[in-house]
Image 1 (cartoon, rainbow, N blue to C red):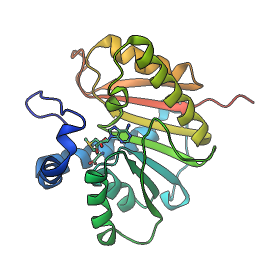
Image 2 (cartoon, helix red, strand yellow):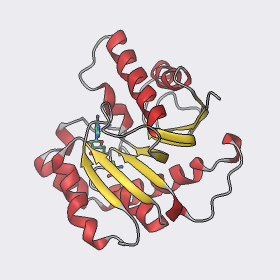
Image 3 (cartoon, helix red, strand yellow):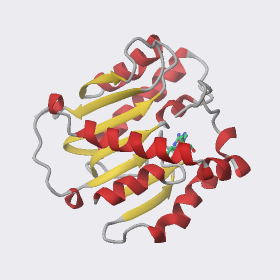
Length: 218
Ligand SMILES: C[S@@+](CC[C@H](N)C(=O)[O-])C[C@H]1O[C@@H](n2cnc3c(N)ncnc32)[C@H](O)[C@@H]1O
């Protein structure tokens, strides 16, 4: 999602006029929509195990950090039932205004919420995706232990929100291999199996997809 290697700053790049600007950028819309399609493809990656999905309208998916709705629009167009959350009203309200333009064949709920404190019951979702937003959950966490605690409790709750055999794909931008390891270990410590894919494997940070499957303790 960054252009010219500048990562956006949360929350400043998503407030007021910046939120307007984000919503108007055609390259951003193209980029977010393309990445969302990649996330959906990765949800059904054979390496996570076989699936037999024919009709997305039988499934409920959570869009974490939906912003102005580019990712949500793709999920709706594919036929999913969608719950989308964002922490900033300046961004979420733009998704709200687009809602009437989206297909009304499926469920779409928009919720102002923090992905670190999700307001959902256990076993709610079949799938979860997050496009260019998960980095920001460590905002204002400065010490290593604060960061680890936030990552762990978020991964733990995401696990609870998923139904049996549920899957998550997170596209994000770790700054270093160490940061990537921290994010991955928060999931493996909380009953997820999975792996990551980088668009450019030689790049230390950069665009990364985490492909995760809930491990059910029978
Ligand atoms: C790149 S933008 C939106 C990307 C979105 N997928 C789209 O299609 O427009 C990242 C979003 O993450 C949201 N965000 C950041 N931290 C969050 C948090 N803790 N909980 C929920 N949303 C958050 C921001 O408000 C921002 O709207």
